[in-house]
Image (tube, rainbow, N blue to C red; front, side, top):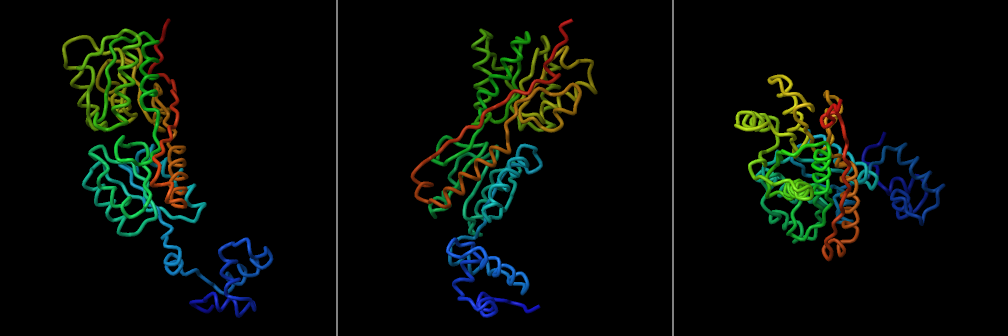
Length: 344
């Protein structure tokens, strides 16, 4: 097999113009189907490989998209990435996936690195400690589109694909109230983050609608990881007063950790003594007994929608920087055993 086969070599073999070979390889409608088949067959036979670097220089594209998430291991983000990849792969793009581990300094380094590597666009769900979008301005100043998804900022003018966080938390809290709960605690992330702020507001709105007094001491903030969740439930159990009727948790990880802790270390039963709900619909939510009531955020749809938006902006830069679009993905309450009290 001959190495470094070029378009000119294919043209000579097939007795066609180099321009025809190029159009055929790029699936141009100006070339007939039979000619395309001949060209592709000969290219495969001779081991022709496109010179991507030269092609990128001509189109001013790297055909690469940067994706930044807090944690790849989280079910939500792995599903979102799946949605992203299914969209961009169909358009010939590759993705460079990085995780910030919920640390702003790490996120900023990743963003700078992706810019230096000339990605054509950026999809980002910011860390819990990211204060604003200033570090993303390097992209907009250089005419490179950015789309935020899941975690976002109201200011900054970036287009985004977000979830019905407020409505999801409202529906979860209302579901607990409908089941007879009155003393409802809320475990939240950093309230400077829009998604946790919205969930907090949804929780408060449900209390207000049902004439239940909001108490600041019922709201506990943390990083919503397993360790923090266990510390919080220990603190609640050590406090004087009646056990909460319910816990509205900011994610499934904290909810599942609390359920496991209560089962293994106390005589408190879920849902008989306390009902618990979360966010995300993690796979384990339907495996643990009782199953965890949760809000499905449809991460695959969020990732897919964000990718479609970004590709549209890459193709139409004017649209990307003259408008700021927001797409909201609807929430879905999944009711399982953790909130179903035995009424007998």
